[in-house]
Length: 288
Ligand SMILES: C[S@@+](CC[C@H](N)C(=O)[O-])C[C@H]1O[C@@H](n2cnc3c(N)ncnc32)[C@H](O)[C@@H]1O
Image 1 (cartoon, rainbow, N blue to C red):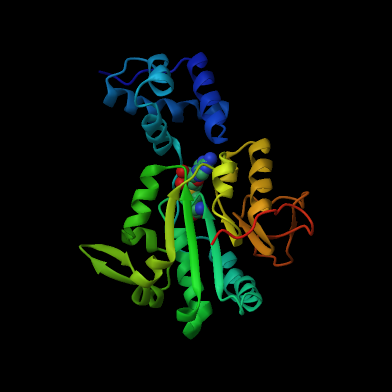
Image 2 (cartoon, rainbow, N blue to C red):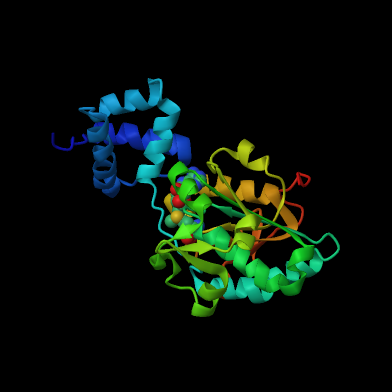
């Protein structure tokens, strides 16, 4: 059986559905991508054409599972430990120490890695938090939450086992200290793993996202590039509503935006970091 072809009308229907569910927008020139990735899924399911697939996904008894599977197939999960080093340097040397100083009485730190893919980013933040806190780490409660729309990505993240390629940007001293070899893979240190929890969360589902309480830092990198302006605005509004008034938002280096109603750029040139506009956003109390 050869891979089914996707008509323009089927593409329109599918991309509308994907957009409504996730905020991810497939531009006209990305039709081939949907066709190739979902075509393989149709072959596995022995479904002949994309109309049948849409019915299976929207009306079939396994529709929730199939949506999950579909998102795992169509999302770009590329990531690595210590991705965008210069930004993380600013985070480690300036932004996080400032927040640690402000939280020194509570001794609690809450960081959300929104759209964390397979977990390299939240574990990196755990390593950084451990380095910044140093000997004080044991007296602090550090909660790092990694979330993603892709169930498959979250499953890999929870295992905390990575091939050497994921560690390509990690200095050897950090590899030695925070990973150990396990059957040809690199297993993250249990103390770092204990700081990090994972959950499947769609950024479109703002109600669900708000249930996790207030964050001192939010990382949302390399996902808003796949969103249209409306979804980007909605995501920023969500972040403003769950970020502590003195917290920081960090976005990917191609995702910097002009100051908006909720966020104002901090001064660090490499940082792509934002502070909340005073009086905007947050109404939540910390759930923890
Ligand atoms: C390129 S990865 C970025 C990973 C990490 N933040 C980094 O910068 O290395 C983008 C991730 O966004 C996730 N994603 C896409 N749309 C999403 C949505 N609506 N809600 C939550 N996650 C989403 C994808 O599943 C993918 O894992």
